[in-house]
Length: 69
Image (cartoon, rainbow, N blue to C red):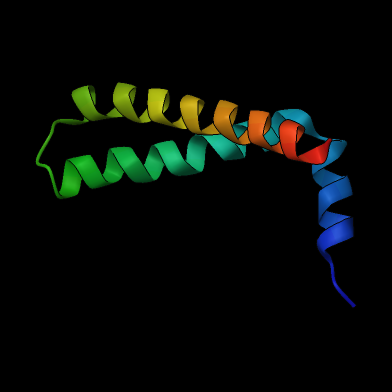
């Protein structure tokens, strides 16, 4: 039995948590990689990571909406 329908409904009832996760995870990974691999300072990598996370979240939401039609 798959837990995907349960997880999907859980995230649908908590959109703020979904948005936080979908922004934080990719943005944090991007910022962390820029700090570790790129040698950037946290002050310059974190804002770029936040922007990356927001763009990723908006793109994911738009694609999910378009593909659900």
